[in-house]
Structure formats: C-alpha cells, structure tokens
Image 1 (cartoon, rainbow over the protein chains, first blue to last red):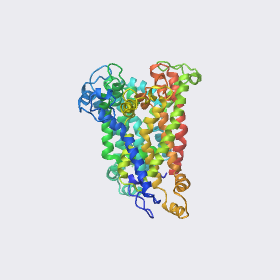
Image 2 (image 1 turned 90 degrees about the vertical axis):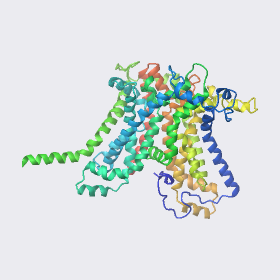
Image 3 (image 1 turned 90 degrees about the horizontal axis):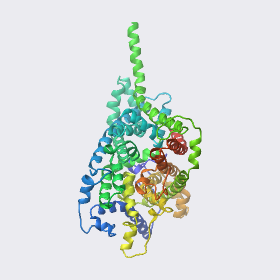
Image 4 (image 1 turned 120 degrees about the vertical axis):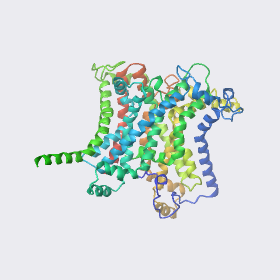
Length: 309
Length: 298
C-alpha cells in the first residue's frame, strides 16, 4: 500500500522534480498562502485548546473556574491542585491521591512491554527467516487478533484470572496486556525483518551459525529502530488502556486511567475541577513525554500498526 | 554406529523444529486466549448465563431478546450516527489539512507534531478535558457568557438529543490529525509528472485535485475507513469518561451496552450475544482488508 510515511520513515524517495517532501506543483499566490497559513494555525489552536484548558485550570483556585474564567490565565497561581491530585484527592473510598495508581501503571507497563517486545522480535524472525508451510496462516491469525473488539474476550478472561488467582492483581493485568500485545509486536518485527537480506542469514547458516546465534549476532544489532517503535506503541497502548483496567483490577491494583476516571466521576462533595485537570495531565504526561521525545517513532508505529498487514 | 545416527537425527530434528518451537508459545497463547475465548463467548451467547456462565442451551433466544431491547436499538443507532459522522468528518478534516500542509509549508514538522499529539493521549484524558470544556456550568457556555454574550447557550452534553454529537466532537479531535498523517503519506507518494502534465494542459488547481490527486488517494481512504470504523465500533473509554453513556441512555454504544449487561445487570447471555455482534461487524471490515494485504505480500 502506498502508505509509508516517507517524510517520517526514512530517506525520501527520489523525485524527478520539486523539493524533497512536497508534491506541490501548483504556484499559489500571496493571498492564497496567507489563507493557507491562517487555516493551519487555526487548527493548531483547535488541537492545543484542550491541553491549554487542562494546564491553566490545573494551576488556579477553584473559585476562578467557577466564576467562568476557564479560558483565562490564573489570576492567582497555585500548585495546590497538583499536590492534591497526587497525594490527597479522594479516589473511590480512600483519600490516597493518584500516586499509588501511577505506580501501579508503571509496574504493569514495564514487564508487559518488555516481554511482548522480545516475543514479537522472535516471532518476526521466525516468520520471515525460517518460513515454513502455513506460516501465512499463522501470521494471519496473529494479525486478526490485533483487531478484535476486546469485549469478546472479557467474560472468559475474567473467569480465567479468577481461576488462576490473578483476579484484581497487577500480575493479572500484566498477563492480559502481554497476551493481547503479542499480535502487534509480531506485526512490527515481521514487517521490519522482511526488508532484511535473507542471504546474510543463509550465509551465516552455512558458516555454521545456529538459530539463536544468528538472531543475536545478525538480527538484533540492526533491530534498534523497530524495537523503539514497538516499545513506544506498546507503552502508549498499555498505559492508555481503560477497558482491561476497569474489568480486571480491584481498588488496590487500578491503573492510572481507571483511577483518574474514578476521581473525575466521584459524585461526593464539590467538584474540584482544578484537581481533575491536574490528574488528567498526570495521566497524560508519560505518553506525551514519549511523543515529544520520540515522535517520529510513534508516528511510524501508528502508520505501520493500523495500516499495514 | 546406529546410536550415533539416531543422536544426529535427534539434533537435526531439534534444529529443524527450533524455529517452530520458538513461535509455538505465542501461537498457542493467541489460539487459546483469542480464538478459544471467542469460541467460549460464542457458546455463552446461546446459553442461559446470568451472573455466572452456565450451559443451559437456549438457542437463538438471547439474540432475539437482544434485538428486541430498546437500549440495544439505541446503542446501534448511536453507533451508526457516531460512526458515520466520525468517519466523514475525520476524512474531510484530515484530507483538507493534508493538502494544505503539502504546499511547502514552513514549520511543517512542528505543525504535524501539534496535529498528531492527541493520538498519544488516553481517551479518558480526552474525555475529561472535553467533559469540563463542554459543561455548561463552567465550560464554553460560561466563558462566552462571562465575555458579555449573556444569552449564549451550548448545552449539548446535557441534552439527550444532542449528547451523541459531543462524543463525535471529542473523538474527531483525537483522531483527525492521524487521518491527516495517512493522507499526507498518500500525497507524498503521488507522481509529480502527471500533475505537471495536467497543469500544462491548463487544468485548474481544483480540477487537478479532484480529477488526479484525490482518485490516487484511494488506498489512503481505504486505510482511513478501516481504521476509523474499527475504532468507532470499539469506542468505550471515551463515552465512559465524557458522558458515562448519559444523559439517561442517550450516548450508549454497543461497547458500553455489552459491559453493563454483562457485569452490572448480570445478563451474561445477552452481553455475550452483543459481543458476538460486535466481533462480526469488525470481522466484516477487517477480514477482507487483512486478506488482501496478505495476498499482496505473497
């Protein structure tokens, strides 16, 4: 499919004419260009608006928000909402703040991402360099598994976690994310290793190198970029997951997204909008940080993950 | 002699089987926890399961009851409204922004980064931000009124007739930048020469895009449709965070319906039936797509 994001992914394909990156051949006049920039900037504001609203309102006292000042900068700057969201806000039945749940999310994400990435790399290696009869079917089944609506597995998974004694625990969540993360990580590594010259693998084989030696010495050293793509994708997806967190955790093992939702939906007392906004930014910060630092890999993962088979 | 032979056979066998052995745990996991579980849910949808799975066979009864339920009707209707608006608006905004951004724009990289960052956020965060922004008491309505337009009214989120459109607003905000990226990638793959030739022949800019560029973006449209339709059917978090399915049941979608029937109303058989319908509709979109992708590869 003509969907590789060449500007992001790598060297821009040679074009007969025009500057790299743009297909534009139409000469636009001055007025038209001003119009174009106007629209583009307008949309920048549209996309930034919710982030702005969250940021400024997390730094002002509640009274300013209630007085209809949601769009204005704080008259009186305060970090109190952040402190409250982190360590004292009421989440469900306890006033623990979001801190314990932030830690839950980290404990859940790290192993799930690490294991699914390693498995994905090995699977991709087998499916491209050690092909066997029926491997396309195996891959097809793995691929379709990426796109199922998870509602179809909720009931049996709830039963299974109960039987395994993992219901309502962080290890249970790790297990679930691992299981449903394998498809995507395999997809990434398979597509990447497909471009890797098979002759090199065959040559090493003739020299007597075995399965794991080839993987370690030849495949792994060139897997850096796709490993980053895969890790970022899995990290973002698992961190942002809500459905599994809501279904399979209990109070002590809630991930950040579930705790944030409980904070915002709690119906007791005054609604502390500023605390809610501070909490929302906390939940968004890790993935946002990854996006800012490694945005091009994130985009690459998005494109490959949702477009290519 | 014979012993050495068998040992070598053993080593050979292991060497040949090793790749498959490495792959097999993952494959087994997916077979059991994806396909086995699908089968399990399938079976449950034909049983009288209530709070726990049970295996009294009731045939198509759950499906008949499901389609007779008013709340399921609402959920499906909402999905059709939400899904079609979501797909169309995302494609229109995405295509427009991609074309504009493809005009040798300064700071293109920065603008692209801004357009795409919502994709990195959780739907719960998006939902929280928009929930309060759309709240008439403190959000947009209150702000505009405080600016002096006292009669300004924007209460969609509290209005059962309009609330579903607030889900569209937030969902479009989250994904339209991503659709832009897909179209931009498509645009970057188009051959300049054809466009130049058409231009020399005197085609106007508008005609150029309508006749030459947009038809060539067909694969990008296909991808965008598949991705967006799939996301629409799975939408759950956003509704929970933004409206909680309300006011009343005004913004229920099949995903929220499934959850509440299975886990809070203890109608597991009906919940399973609704999950089966969801899977079927996603399969109808994804299977032909995956099939064509795999065949292309071969």
